[in-house]
Every structure is written in structure tokens, then in C-alpha cells.
Length: 455
Image (cartoon, rainbow, N blue to C red):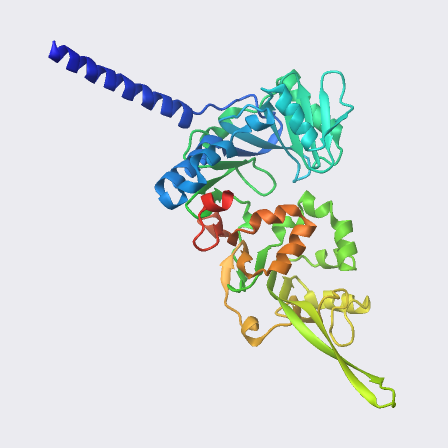
């Protein structure tokens, strides 16, 4: 009898263990991709693995007892869309439609709670718009976001610029006509251990579709991928890339020259720089680089005189503090001397070789090694050059920004506040074996984990 009881106990424990593991797997690791969430005319997809990201923060909390006060429940709630009346998916798929502006992205979702969904619309200042009989449209000017609803399905689009008809067509393709994307093209982006996967359709830059993976580490977000660039974009060029600069940026100019984002904004660029950009483009720019070292504070003393009752002069000194950038900019072309002469004839460069269209600092202009150079407030150390061979790069040392700089940036765009907890951003594109190796990372400030800065 005792043996029977022991066997029954063992079986019960085994069943409980198996059941617990099954439940843990189902809620924590089992993932299902909705093939009906992306339209067929998509040329870019950002696949966000909600469960992988949520699990990363939960396990990070469990591995670090000092962070238990942050609570794993906070990590769960952070990725729980039910607060907005939306069903929480296993994958959140952001997609970009062909021939649309680069910053316009959409995703789909399912409404599961009417009252919470309507409250969310109200809280974010969405108002109803004209959208045809089949759909209900909502637009938020504050968020520049458009939502189209069809029964319990919604299409959520950002940076819409009131372009409602485009998004109505997307919603019709998905919800009415059922024109879905061929999911076989993105099989490699599903059921991986990566937090985010980016798929890019082959285009005028790529010979084949590109995939970039994004993974989460304890204090860093890392992106990697191989891109089969077309031959004319495969060059490794020589850049300065000063390691201690606030911002360094360099790239093969051919990559952006024929892109829509460049061509469509040429008029605005002409207005900003104060001359016709075509005067540079006709000389075939090959590479460009900006090294923004820092923002310097300069103090100037203004002397004035006043008089007392006995007409004795009283000297007054007023100290004015100004802030000026320290930077180096270069652009290499087929004939930079002609560009220099053109700018001088247009009085953009004065007789002292100063680029007068940039009022924030005295900017010296010159031509060296067939590159047009603009330089301001450079020291001898900053002028020294160490060569790095790459196709393109971006490096930002966020820890060099002062509180007043952050206040200025956030006042311009509140989204910059998301970068404040981070220390560095690095992006590199290097050519090797006829492939472009893409590497990027954003690292949190020393001693801070992603879990800490996300709360």
C-alpha cells in the first residue's frame, strides 16, 4: 500500500512538472507568426519578437538580485498591449510600402477591449476622419499617426502627413482583398533567438534581399548583418573618424546620391546651405565626412564707460558667453577647385576664406587633396589624422553632451530623450569578400543595464 502511495506521488510530481514546463513553454517561448499582418507590396519589414524581448528583461532581473526591486512584473507589463485594448502578439511586424517616404511605417493589430481602446484614442487626442464606408479612421496630430479600423482589425501608421488615401489602399489590400506578403521570403526572421529582425527587399543598392539581426545584451543593443551591395557601392574609403569626437559621420556619397530621400528634399537643402546643391553634384562627390568634436564656450568681455556725479569715468565690463561648434567637414569630388571658385563667385566664401553661410562659428574654407574642407575651432590634436578604411560609419559619444545640450535637443524633438541613458552609438559598414558587413551598437552608460534604464 505504501509503495502504491509512493508511486502515485511520483506520478503526480512528474505530471505537475511536465504540465509546468508545458505551460512555461507555451506562455514564454511558443511563438506564432500571423501571415496576414503584412501586405504584398512591402519592401521593408522590422520583425519585433515580443516574447524574446520580454523574456530578456525577466531573466536579466532574475540573474541580478540587486535589480529585483525593479520587478519582473514591470517587464511583463511593458510588453502587454492590453492596456491599450489591443491583443498582445508574439511578433509585431512593422512594414514599409514601396514608393512611400522612408519614414512612413505601419503595423496591424487586433482590438480585444473596446473601452480600453477608445480610452487610448481619447488620451492620445485621436479624432475621427473621413475614410469611406468600410473603415473608421482616426488621426492624431500630436503623434502624426493615423489608425484605420476594419471590424476588430486596425492598421496603425506613423509619419502619415495626412496622406489618408495611401493608407486606405493598404488597409483594403490587407483586410478586404487579402493580398498578403509571401511569408517564405522572411522565414529566416521567425523563431530565432534575436529580439528584432530587419528584412530589406533587393533594390537599387542591393543585389539580393538583406537581413539584419538585432540582439539584446546586458548593457548593449547590437545589430549585425551581411548586405550584398551592388559593385559601385562596395568601396572601402579612408576616413578620419576621430575617436573622441561628439559625432563622426562618413560615407560613400554614391549610396545616397540617387535615393528618393535625397532627391525629394533637395529644395530644402538648397535653402539651408544657401546655394544650389547641384553645383556640387555635377562634380561627382565620392565621399564625405563630418567630425563634430564638441561645443565650445567662449567668453568675450565688452568694455563701456559711465560717469559719476563728478563726471569721473567709471569702467564697466560685461562678460558675454557664446557657444560655438568645433568641427571638420570634407567632401571629395572630381574637381573641388571649381566648387570653391563657384562658391567664392556666389559670395558664399569671402576674401578671408570664410564660409559666410554658417553663422555659428568662423568657418575656414580650403581645398586639399581634391577635397573641399570646412573647419572651425580646431586644435592641433583635433587636426591630426588617423585613417580608417570603411564604406561608411557613424559614431556618437552621447556622454559628451552637457545637460543644456540635452534640454535643447529634447525641446526640438522629445524622442531624443530616449537616447539620454545611453553612452555611445556606433555604426560601421565594411566591405569584405565582396559583401558589406553591417555592424551597429548602442551602449548604455557605465554600470547601467538595459533593465535599469528601461524602467
